Image (cartoon, rainbow, N blue to C red; front, side, top):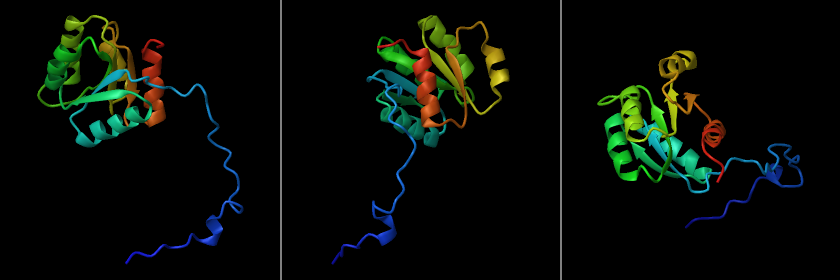
Length: 154
């Protein structure tokens, strides 16, 4: 039989100092159910990014490589608000997928993601219409902020 374990005395609310951070921030980025496609060959990154974005109110679809991304985008193009696209993947890398996405929809909003140096990544995509870049590993707040900065106000 399971028994209820009493909480330790030191965890009682009277003895816990009030938490100073984080304040309730009304400007917290919220996805308002906008659809974001997360494209990464690493399952743990896809899953984590999906949870992060859902926490901020985004709807999420995932693809594990550039080819899946392009195939999915053909079906969902009018619904996808932004794509979080990893640069280095098997089958079709982010650079190739990005080029195809741009031919399908010139105003597609792509947030490039890479463990590589941002300067190098941005240099390779300068003038090609990339919406933004986020360095791995990223925090959920960092990802939400980046997305908010490339998406139109809803």
